[in-house]
Image (cartoon, rainbow, N blue to C red; front, side, top):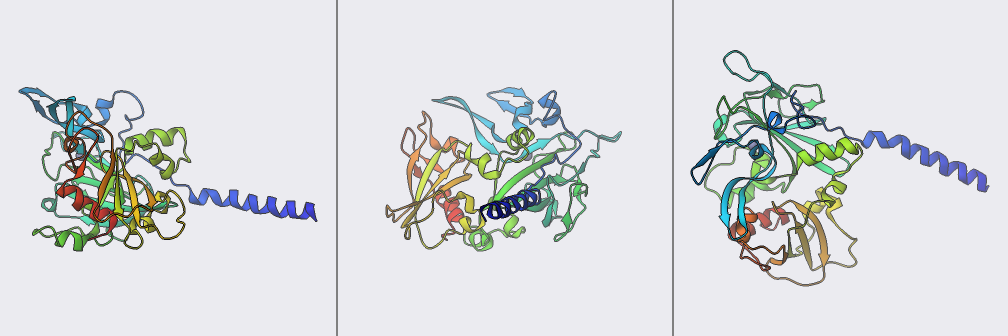
Length: 343
Ligand SMILES: [Zn+2]
């Protein structure tokens, strides 16, 4: 009997192991440019034109993900204050007139959820968004500045299918600086349109797939870490991000973000929490949600990484103050409302 039980357990175990590959997801580069893994990073990243205090340069570093643009001289030294949410990938093929020819492929299999065909309706120019249904929730890759899109919403796309062609549509880009801007995102709200309508006079042409509703992860770090560990999960990846600030908000029912990304909830609720404490990285990616028994009327910053300069410079203007205290700015409160669904 014991032996039979053991056989059953072994069989169940083997079935689980057998089921595992179905949950695995691949992560590929979106163009033929593979220099991120070898050689000179300036072959991979497209530079920007910089003019800092009269000194002109063309740094490739500004094509990376992160705070890589808009230098400012501060009490904490010279820092970059503008956040770049994606990777700017250089073309590897051009015709004799310099027109880029690179084709763009999905970074992982998924479903096309948005195709922006009008170049002038956002700074992304023509862009495509693909949803990836990974075990930890839906993640969204975005391909911007395309010359043209070659897919339609609803299409299922595999790694070999062409999404579009690399181009130079959108703001602040020309033929010389043509590149693919690629992002991997969490979706903040599925009621984005009503959030947008209550804050902006201008129309939203992109439904839930407006860049304001998509929060970008460090895709370059994910590529490198997945090369080392192909089974790396998004939760494990995000657990290594540095917490920069924590915000406590009143719990008004369930957080829609947790329904989409249950892995963010840090421990099971015992009873009904009266507040949530949300941990963010410096750029505003929610990393964890802790149920809290401390009641809160208005959102409050409970902790911030101490800084010699203004928190506004370090947080895309979402926090005010300096040192070890911070408050939410108007834009910070607005962003938080999108994260929590409290609007
Ligand atoms: Zn970019």
